[in-house]
Image (cartoon, rainbow, N blue to C red; front, side, top):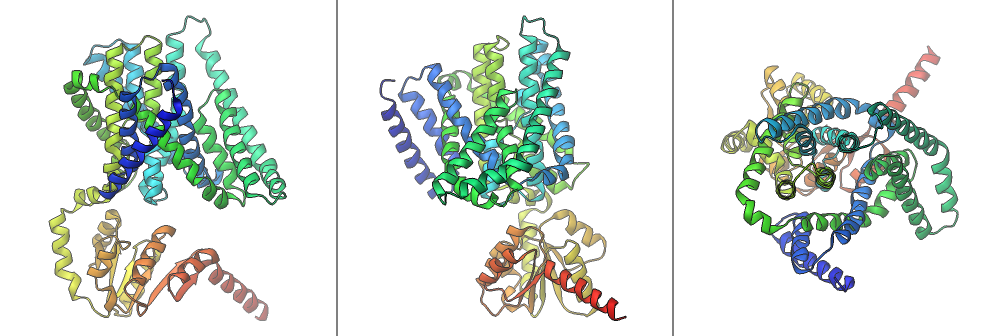
Length: 540
């Protein structure tokens, strides 16, 4: 490879051409990047050192992705997610790792050390692909998105012990496991202390100082310094770049600059993620696929089925069935950190060359399938509860009959109280709720006007005659879903009487810009009530 610039130009050209064509048929850009990497590695000869250098560059795509995810989750938010991270995540990793290890040992007759390395590698899912698609679909804060993120975070944490285990069992060193675990705990304590102190006392002052220069360029450079510096520090003391980036994002989430930082970094994150997926494609050896194709496809199907069952059974008894199915569909694949684990196991002599290549291709193929599943995840989950023909039949029976009715979007606590009040006043209403568990609970309680439907879809609103309704009450908790519903309602005309509850003035301004006139600011209403009560008490 004599001209690296030529390789870069050809790679960008192929990726651009493929992604333009794929976008026309609504396929994700991830696939275009992976195929580009496969084509490039076939056209040019890359040495192992070159691939390793590109791999280090590509890691920064995951770094910036995890950083922007961290911006969405403050320390308080993560504390509230302890069940998702430490319970669901632990059940998935140890459950899948143990079962895959047992299968590798007893079915494929691999030695125990090799079986454990492979088993726990297969337990890991793709942080990069799953979180990228969840972000694009605005579902990172949904019920299944929150659980998916929690499990992925635990998997990122689990990478360190897995790599440590492989190093221990293949090392000639006399250093004991107890000493290594003590070092790991000390490193974790150091990370927590540094991030807590930096986040509370230093970061905000640092950004105030850089903003004094009144330069967007300097501000952006300062953000890069924080992200890369924190990632490097955490990696140096034994953890991963991505974990450091996530913690850095959490630290900055506590500051006033989080939204500005997220907007400025989005283009860099997506470009570097593209590089990451190109390097994933470079690891596919199609000659091995032709030779071991039947084995690879068999493993792919077997891993997906077994892992899906393990994930579903691990979380089903704690959450609603629909959410469990969507979480399973999001995490069925094997991810990029599995490639890191397999690479170390191969370099340490635990895995043979042909076994490594078969596993790598299987992992990459599972990652390629993932965007297609995530794109249709709601449709698949709906099919698991109500077959499409039955759902359509239900719409046909009732959709056209409604007129001068109130549409309640969402059957959470607010929606339930609204429905109860309307029922007492003998006002015709219908409830649109996309959570099958809430729908079933409503039916069990005798509520006959509830329908399993997603109010953020324009076709659903049209089917339930939103144009002829008396009012539409948006009682959805998810902020982004509220925006989408209001935007779709506005497209039917300004005559529709829409009532929306918002959380703050910023959201109120956004909703008002969509043409909604009846907006209830929860904070202002509560403030007015408190002030009124205080005045009333003083008069009495």
